[in-house]
Amino acid sequence: MTLQIPSDFELGVATAAWQIEGDLAGRGRSIWDDFAEIPGAIVDGATGDPACDHVHRLEEDLDLLAWLAVDAYRFSFSWPRVMPTGSGPTSPEGLGFYDRLVDGLLERGITPVATLYHWDLPSLLESAGGWPARDTAYRFADYAQVVAERFADRVDRWATLNEPWCSAFLGYCSGTFAPGRSDAGDSLAAIYHLILGHGLAVERLRAAQARNVGIVLNLIPVVADDLSMEPVVRHIDGLQNRIVLDLLAGRGVPSDLRESCASVTDWAFVRDEDTPVLPAPIDWLGENYYTIYRVAPVGEADADAIGQETAAIPACPPMRFAPREPLTDMGWEILPSGLESALRMATDALPGVPLWVCENGAAIPEVTDETGIHDQVRTDYVRDHLEVLVRMREKGFDIRGYYVWSLLDNLEWASGWTKKFGIVRVDPATGERTVKDSARWYRSLIAERG
Ligand code: FCB
Image (cartoon, rainbow, N blue to C red; front, top):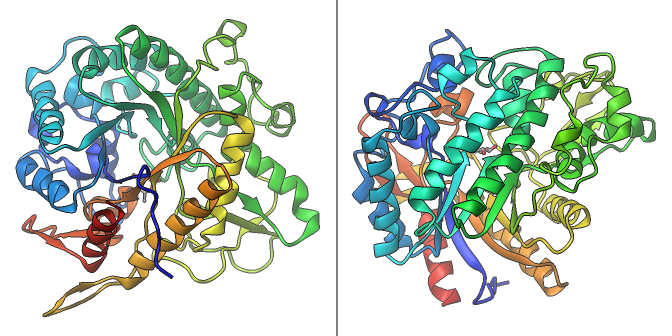
């Protein structure tokens, strides 16, 4: 069946600064640069420079976007490129790079969609305490103001944070992501301060006349076949989804979570004065969807799925993750219908807020021969998820657009170059770009939609 994309439905692609930019000489260090120096932290020893050398290949990458004819490009500002030490003076070169990026998009008729924080905290702010420290939220708001004052006239849509769950729980609980710390109590302080930082930043963005201010989450439906797992499902759903949605909706920390995490925190970091700040009204919500969590009683071996680790769950009850085939190279179960559940969660918590799918895509095996790079599973993955969105729109859900993750093969965080999500191949040794079949397919989908 051919996929009929409505003419007002936005199609785009997404990237993130640390994963593609390179050019460490042109910016301050971030926690990901420090993390990459820890032996074994990044599986193949990859570092943030050269990554995709995007800073030096900007024109070529802009031309790729123009060839695809995407409506929108979602990128992230690197905080340490804008403010090398995380607070205080800005870098004229860093701001100049983003001027060229944003102006280059506009010249090509592509809408710039910017994320302010896609996980690359300036190293000096981590030394000062990182996200478990309240002050980081205020530093984030200052940084947001600087960027908004410079770019509010040209950036069409703003996300404060990308997937705060990963920053907090992979960064500070399991320690599998930068900064690599493992303290369950600190990770709960981190998620709270991230959302506080978001609320403070929303105010600054609005004061700077930024249009369309929102946040991008990774809401993940949690399911279990075994009825006895109900309390575990609730705990994980609380940490993955409800804590953020409830803070954004003005309901505070869910009371069941306050109890189930009492062994690891006294929640002293929650302050009354934050009550009006946390639910700062947003104009849109982004969802990054890849998979669901399927949880099961302990017993059989744990799954080997990236990001699905009990160590990332504060006060984790006995359980294991048990994704089912088909799996991607990340070990993630492919389940397009889960996207509907995730988006329903968002609309239930924040009714009336328009939705965008800001990331969706797959790391899968590819076949390369003289005729090209064949990645049919990726194309099917994207098509099947788009199909879910088209059906949901027919049911009346306010879903405005979809961005493939990712434009380029890039540094997949702790997996380095070993997991490829691009619709365009990047040779890590030479930086050479080669379009894959999925990119050609996406381009024709955009062209046919008109
Ligand atoms: C998301 C991240 C993105 C990318 C994809 C695969 O969690 O936001 O940067 O790594 O996963």
